[in-house]
Length: 451
Image 1 (spheres, one colour):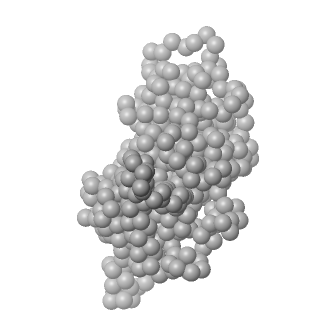
Image 2 (cartoon, one colour):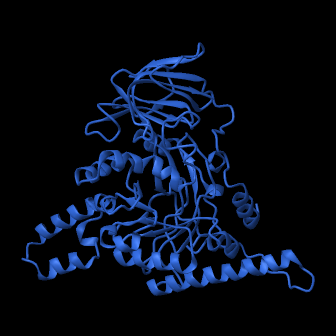
Image 3 (cartoon, one colour):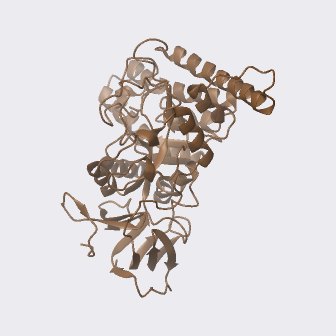
């Protein structure tokens, strides 16, 4: 399909499928009874019932009538939370080869290893790249993600200066772009240079991005003029790269800007302000060093904590160069500061979501627990993994909390809520379809009995 037509079609539609859309799926009707329910937006119900029909939540509460056709599951001693949403995933995409170009951030980023072999068509300068058109999640990858309690992921290319258009994908077996909840969600930017040719340095990357945005602004103006009255006006070229950026410079499509270290954060904010972008900073590993720059802007904080030696802030460098000489102690202090990043942002009043940053699914929740141990309130952490993440994708009315009318993306745990120490995920619902997770089992199933 012509790339330009694809971009225009998806931008016009906005939502590929706002409700579960897998043809022929047998979801049926479920009644989850006697559960402790973390609704996120309506408090905690200590012993309640959730009714699911056709993939949607149709009733929640302590006094719920159970439909006669429902499959009843007793969840005594279990907790039900909204399914987690990861806003930093490359799952199911061909990778862009890593380069030694400029702009290497301290946060590790989402490297080329997080996907199939590199696709030679893509250089990381591909704003017209549509993730939904090439996406294919394998059953094994979907299962590994679900087993961690993640029920939806924002999939975007993981490297480059102008990366392309992301898609929010439910973690169903063999999910493709046709299953996307929304596409496009955002245009994704970063600071990695090209592997070959221009731009390779950090300043070259920024110059390339700025020029592309100026060109897109001009391109949109010329297109509008021609559409309004084409007589006597030279028809503008069809340029897929610029066309993909037009809604970004007009503020109708968000820009997700990956920026991990302090300098990257400040540079990304400056570009966003210069062009009046509707931007979100993604990564923000050293956000605690740039609170003034982040104030008033949405942030996605990655919890793939880097090794202290990879941080770039002046405080760390000075400690290492002028401190007592105890590099191990300095590294411990730096690790403590990085794990406390989200807590500092929360105290400063900065609203953020939490994301894996490319960490393995099994490490994602464990890293969030480290952030909680470092001072982030547990209820804020759960919001940051659910409703706040849904808000940043524009789908807060469909996802992110346990409320009537929302999609039944749920995680069932024992040993406390999903963020509790020692909690174990025992079942996950995606679009109202149940996947059980047996202790120590290597596969998910959709059987009737919860272990």
